[in-house]
Length: 191
Image 1 (cartoon, one colour):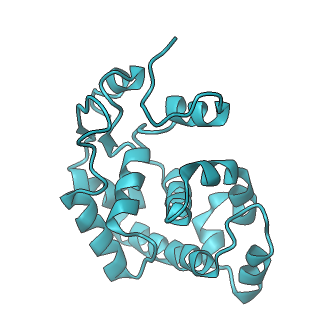
Image 2 (spheres, one colour):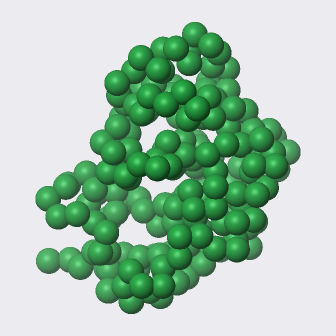
């Protein structure tokens, strides 16, 4: 049996698939990064389990995570989303997702891609941590502080430092698999 990170619940295949195939894998695709940005921002104050269960609902509700389409959403779309049981129906988070799509596109236009902007925060290579267990794994770092501050300055919301650190972990900017997890060694090389 493969050893996984301490936070992966047994018996939840969708969670195991996420851990084994996605979490911590370096992403440089803007659409995939936009998906994680929406999901991580929606998760603020909730469990990741809740968001993973609603992921397909988010995909349907947010135009397949197409940032251009989401940036065009208007008041009618906000009301449609507020009535959609497939997502977290929080008006502030819905408005933030739409506004964040616009900022995301502005950053991508200015930098060539959102990925270029994002990966500059870690000098283009994943930070390789070596945690032995849950002790010591931070909720935020000076890098996530800087990322959150810059995104907020640009107008994004629900992008606090803790949320941005979770985003960095899921998008592979940091390898926070514990050293006893089979994925740690697989992701320890350059991206």
